[in-house]
Image (cartoon, rainbow, N blue to C red; front, side, top):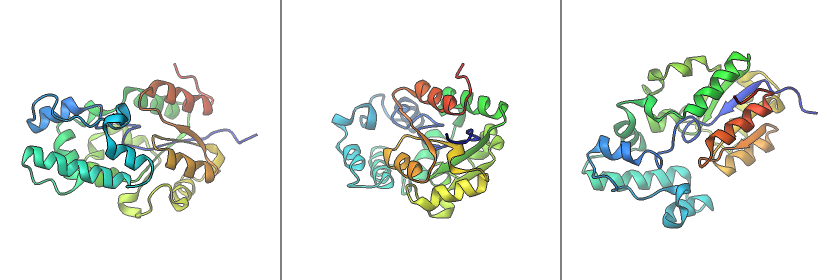
Length: 220
């Protein structure tokens, strides 16, 4: 049997935050675009998002996908968005807490209250959101470890990304419950020996319930 799960390890974008696909209305309002302008919806409507489908079969990377979407929004707004972080900060900077998943905040609080360790393992936390974004989210101060490839330059699913997080948590790999919305990253975590939950953006409540169950915690 695996050791008792001691740590909850979360991807950030899409898991802790709602995806940009889910917040088109907030983005359009923030950027002065007419409602309904943004029509790409990734996993919420993959049939009408060929670029998303290309990313899912590894024809392009996740960063490539969002670089293209940043270019699209720059053309629509006439703003000089050259980096993903420029777009995200403009779209989400006014009220970061408005895009947090309530299910994520509840799960984080339950894990913290139970004495579990908390970690973020992200490919682009500060790259996409800007270094000041996390300072405006008080709950991140409860995290024991934040591993951000913005600085490490080691992207999931590279085995070294998981190894670095596990080492900083100082717990066995099998004592970590890792949650991510990208299948390739889940495969990498499982190979590294972690317990995993493939996060379903269409049903976040069920995904966090699965993670809490692995932590031997009630979901409600």
